[in-house]
Amino acid sequence: ERNTTNVPMSYGGLGLWVFNQRAYYNSYRKGKPSHMTPARLEKLKSIGFEFDLGRKLLSAADERWQSRLNELKEYREQFGTLRVQKSKNPSLYNWCQNQKASYRAKLKGRHSPLKKEREQALRYLGFLDYID
Image (cartoon, rainbow, N blue to C red; front, side):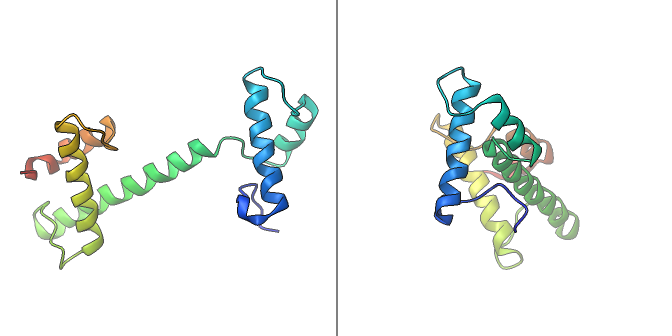
């Protein structure tokens, strides 16, 4: 009906079944005992079953982050600065504040969600020059 195999657990029996198929696949892939069989694996692949949502979710998060970075570039083109004003773009302002906080945490040796590639992109843009 929805043309996806990404069914949440909250969807009831089908959600549980989908969750179990992923768990069986992970065990099978690691050579552990599993209900997954080569035949079942082929059938699931034939309908486009998504076994590893982690990569897809990561990819979506990376796309959202890149979209924000592009928005920041556009802001600089429009206003001539990377110092985003809350009154001009509240959501971009909040994103920038989160990037700054993540970078500061990284500098202090604390856990930070700021990946090396993202830090490099912010540095290349000149954004990190604005962090006090």
